[in-house]
Image (cartoon, rainbow, N blue to C red; front, side):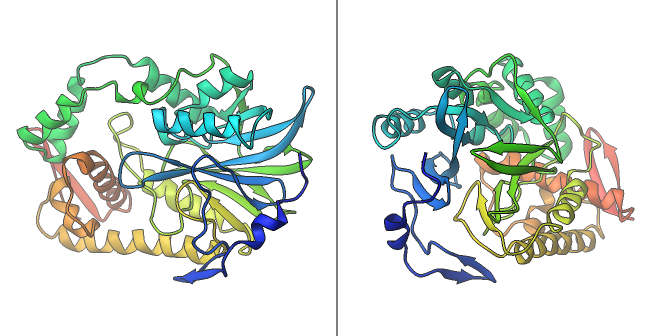
Amino acid sequence: MSDAPDAALLEQAPEPTTHKGLVYPFGGREPAPGTAMPVAAGIRWVRLHIPGPLRHVNCWLLDDTDPRGDGVALIDTGMNTTDARDAWKTLWRGELSGVRVTRMIGTHFHPDHIGLAGWMCDRHAAPLVMTRGEWLTARMLIADARDAVPEEMLAFWRGAGWDEAQIAHAEARGWAGFRRIVTPLPLGYTRIAHGDTLTIGGVAWQVVVGSGHSPEHACLYDPIGKVLIAGDQVLPRISPNVSLGVTEPEADPLGEWFESIARLRQLPDDLLVLPGHGDPFTGLHPRLDAMDREHRERLDELHAFLAEPRRAIDCFGRLFRRAIGPDMLGMATGEALAHLRRLEVERRAVHETIDGVRWYRAA
């Protein structure tokens, strides 16, 4: 594989644009459907459509070699949808014809990132590379094949303040949605952990693990090329969802998120950040600072709002700038509970359960 991006393609990029302290070196340019766009030496960008408000996910191809010869390491895959599979087939019939995936690296377990990981591993006889927490979580969700929503989940929703109509809407969607948009994963995988080094195509990538958005989210950092493949841990225009869920209701995901921001801030500011959604950008520190500040300001607003007892659903107006419809209710609830739990950990709030509903108030 080439050691450098296609200079002719990079020359077509418009002038860099700036927004809120970030610089977008490719302007508004993005890869066309069914193509891979060079962004740095040995790195190409694939953008795939996904359903929902995010609209797309970014995947990254890194030039690589293994005992079988040249190929690419693939980072993230898109969701298991017809659109995504067709886009990859177009790539492998076209400009990636004859190119193998040497290893399949998943940043985290969310289906828009590893939905086709098992499919890729089968197609290319490639090993799956993930952190243990992400791989185990994905395997657990795929294996939990119940069709009916568990009673614990119904109680969790009621505890957050959902009414019967909201619960009925969620119940109608069933419980096994994850397995429908994720192809089966291999039984074995290659584990990576924070501080590890992955050598890909002669480049020594350092593994930087964050948490809060998911259990052990892997980012890859190239200190020589000054590139950070950030997945969902750092996004340019939105903050990733940080949710408290039924599987670990006493956790503190927002606290873990703040710790992860502090860890990432130890990296240099002048990196090219390749995010899971949105466009590549520079300005890592301003973005980390903005995300940290946004969540802390929300905590302060929420603390003031808890002068009277509130349920999680009562807090949406203090946390979100738009109305929350039925399809976003679960994520919004998880985010509200994460902020309420953080206030409890900081001893700024307490809760009591009345008739199965959790009521929070300022301490």
